[in-house]
Amino acid sequence: MRTAIYPGSFDPITNGHLDVLQRATKLFDRVIVAIASNESKNPLFSLKERLALVESAIATMKNVKAEIFEGLLVEYAAKQNAQAIVRGLRAVSDFEFEFQMALMNRKLAENIETIFMMPKDTYTFLSSRIVKEIARLGGDVGAFVPVHVRTALIKKLKPRKQKD
Image 1: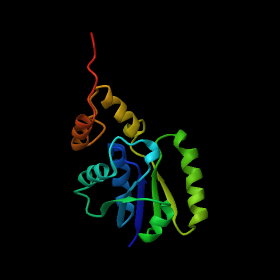
Image 2: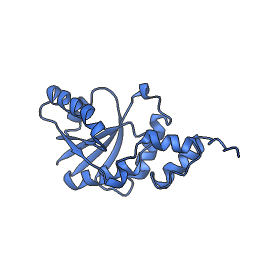
Image 3: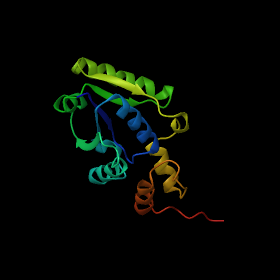
């Protein structure tokens, strides 16, 4: 069984993430969305909340599951018997960091490949950070995230009301 790990903080999961994930499911028998425990990023949603949001977003995808992981990604991938790590590239600015990480992961575990995937062009500008900022300022993020994520953002954030 060909298995891939799709890691990230997913704070929150966006339609761009889901687009890359859908593409990955066509290449692998099983894809694990690995939600990183990276508190240095000051996440808006807790790990449990992010897991619940991802699980809801992938509920109809038969060969996808979500898990929380800590520690080295390649060690987690090896424990899952994964052959690949899937990473999304939105723009050239993502490439340098992702390339360095892929080379380091290869050095740590040469049998695990990194696959770079580009989302649809309509999602190349999209990031969780931008979605949170739009929601924080009271903007509608409905076109960028699943409905349940939009609802969770509205509940979590109390948008500032604009003064005239």
